Image (cartoon, rainbow, N blue to C red):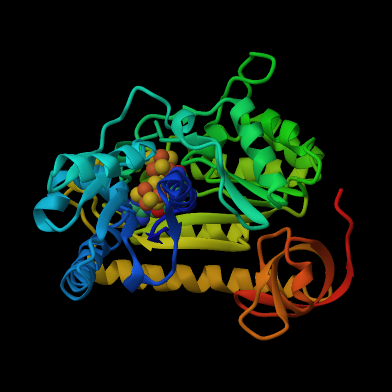
Length: 450
Ligand code: SAH
Ligand code: SF4
Ligand code: F3S
């Protein structure tokens, strides 16, 4: 048995990919071990979305060099270092140039080849191997059938890549063109996860609502149709999907929010800015009012739907007026949660070449006021949940002895007292207290699986 240490940065898709890499290394005898010092192989699954994220990789690699050296000197033991994910894809050879102690660089589209790369590394005496191809084969067809243990709430990638080319974003370059898995392979994977104890699935895609896979009837389905089909699976209690693009929010998907009970009333729908000028410069291809119309339609389908979003402040050319329009859009929507970032210049993207860059100081000021507004909306939303009764899925033990941690339908984290035997079950709770980032509650009773 060999020890595998995996560290994951970035989005949920990287979390899914890391799990699949663990699955694919298991037949080679690698088993996950959270102790870095014991590792025989270290995989870092990286994110390239903002400068800070990708620079982190190199400082991390500096630390790993020491781990590798120590194992060699003190225990005569070899530690393999693998860099995977979006920095691997974007930087390729640059990584082994800057960090020659890295053994394997593998991109998001080729990690199914990891076992072969490991075998090759042992047999051909190469200092390192790099595989960042966009291969002709479909990765998902080559990943192991056997899935390792996942939690009560698990991710399932249904779509990967992006054809939208927002002018600030590296994803179309690191993840490649849009690809949708077939409905059949998604449903099969869902069944496996459910038989291993998963009760909630989050369907993943860089642009998940652009999913258009071949359905069971050999016709092309949209994401809405897929959700209807997944909702039929016994013992699956809850369905979510992320991340969506406003342009791909079609009628069937909106209808699913009205008709499918298992589809949770929470949607992450990034808008990035409330200014039409900036939206256009970002190549988002919709206006602020079109975004608001989509939200109105979602709310008519499912009145209590909680909205979440992503925002970028300080995009090149963003004026005070543009920024004020973003605040005004946020006011109109009323978000239950949101993520916000300072614009970060990414080499190779169209926006990187723009001359009207916003100063760091203004970016910081805008981020602070934007986050104040979003935080106050989140707090207000959480407060409306006090005394409410929710069905929640118990995901894990909480830090405090005797406490459990679960998620409400609206994605809030909720804490309450209860026995560990409830992990993986849906229980009904009454919220006693709401804070900025979480709720406290008391159990009313346990629910039977549907
Ligand atoms: N596919 C998703 C999100 C991808 S990246 C979508 O279309 O919304 C996640 C978030 O990171 C984005 O929504 C955006 O808010 C942020 N982001 C992406 N590129 C960025 C950049 N160059 N600078 C700052 N934030 C960025
Ligand atoms: Fe990036 Fe835009 Fe694609 Fe989202 S839709 S992944 S922000 S290019
Ligand atoms: Fe980061 Fe790649 Fe995800 S750049 S956000 S890990 S798609």
